[in-house]
Image 1 (cartoon, rainbow, N blue to C red):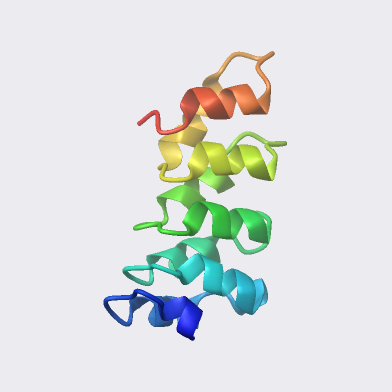
Image 2: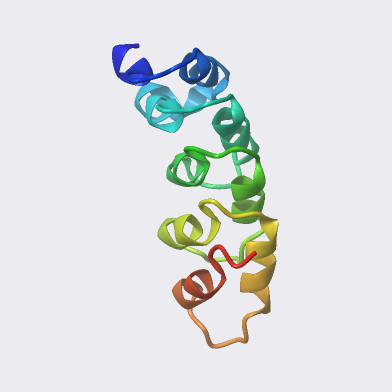
Length: 120
């Protein structure tokens, strides 16, 4: 609990941890919720269960204020790597995924992610 709540100004990290998906395990749940200002990161990560990897759940949702980053990740072009999903969807909304799907064929998923990250 000490690492989770270190520097916290409210109970938000603890509440986030309690509502986060249990299947992430304690270390990833702690990483997801450290510094949280609401339960939003947990809600965001929960939307990705059985859709994206645990690394993506934590990577795109840590610090999230909404479910936008996970909406982006679950609608991103098929075949995107975890790293590309993180680049594309961290701090993004679903329109970033739509942008990546519209990039002409021939661009790699990394190029699509780089082009469309934070594009909206």
